[in-house]
Length: 59
Length: 392
Image (cartoon, rainbow over the protein chains, first blue to last red):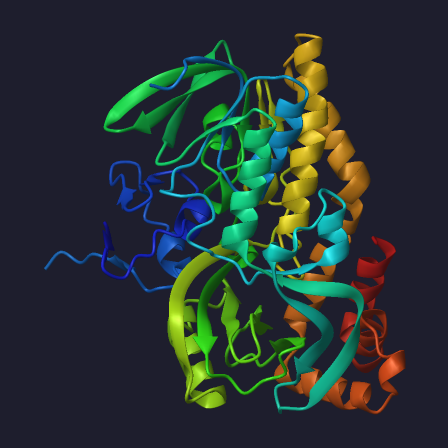
C-alpha cells in the first residue's frame, strides 16, 4: 500500500502522470490512491517532488 | 446549473484549453471549459519564462502579462564558470496568473462558458465514441453531453486514458520539480540563469528566472530516473542555502514536467488531446506554453471542420495530429534527442564545455556551437549529437 502524507502533498499531479494503471485520482485539494488497482510499481513514490508518498509497511 | 448539451467540452482551463475554447467559440460553436481548481491561473506551477515571438503568434501581447523582459542567458557550469549568451530572441518572464486569466477572458469574450471547481472524473462513451463527460460539481456527479471532448488536463492526463489512449510516461521522462518565488536576491535581473550542476539536478537543471530586480522563480527539475537518490525538495533547499543564503520566499510549489516525445495517438473518436496532456512540452527546456497554445489553435481548426461536417471519427480528427506533426513534431523529436545527449554529460564534461565556451567571443557563442563542442569533446556522444541535429 502507498501512504499519502497529505500535509506534504501539493496535489501537483506528477504521480498521476506516471501511474501505469491510472489508480491515482485527484481533486483540487486531495489525492487518492485506489489500493485495489495499485500494482505497487512505486513510480509515484519515485517521482513525488515533495516526498509525500511512502510505501506503507505492515507494522 | 450547468447546461447539459454542448458542441464541445474542454477539460482543463490552462493555456491549451482556453486557447482552444477561444478559437472554437469564435466560430460560433457552444464551448464549455471545466477547470478542476478553484480558480484559473493558480497555483502557478511554472517557471514562467517564454520567448515573446512564440506568444505573439497567437495573440497581441498585453503588457500586463509580462513581469520582466529578458535579454541574456547565463549558464553556470558545475564548477561555477559563467557562460553568458545574448538572448537572440526577445524573452520574457510571465505573470502566469494574470496571463492564464486573460486567456480565459478572451475565450469568454468569444462566447465560451467557463466553470471552476468542476472536476471531470469520467468520460461518457457510447460504442467507443466519446459522447460527453461526468463532472463532479458541488457534491454532485453531473452528466454532460458533447459532440467533441478536448483533453487539456495537463500533466496528469487522465481524461485521454479513459478513451483508451496510453498517456502515462515512464519516470525517466518525468521531471520532478519544486520551485520557490524567492525575494531579496543578488542576481542578474535581466538574464535567465541556468545552473547545470548534477549534484543539484541530475537529468535536469536549476533555473533562476527574474520576476523583478530582486525576486525570481528559483526552481529545479530532476529526472524521475534520479529522484530515488535525491529529493527535489531537499535539493532545492540545498541550492538556496548554497547560492542565496539570505533569500526568503513567498511561494513553494511542486510540479511535474513530462519531457517525453508527443503521444503517438492524440485523437480518439470524439476526443482530441492538447498541451501537456499530449506530452507536447519541449523535452530539452521543459517549456510547454507555446506548444500548448499551438495545439489549442490546431485542434480548434480541426474541431470546427469536424463539427461542420458532422464527423468526429478518429479518422477525421487525425487531421489535427497531422497538422501538429507537420508544424512541430519533427522539431520536438530533435529536442528529445538533444535532451538525451545533455543527460549523458557528467559534471566534468560540463566544466570542460564551460571553459571552451568562455574562450570564444561572446557574439559567437550559440546553442548550436555548444552542441558542436559537446560532440568534439565527447567522441562517445558524436553520434547522438549528429542524430539530434539531423532531426531538427
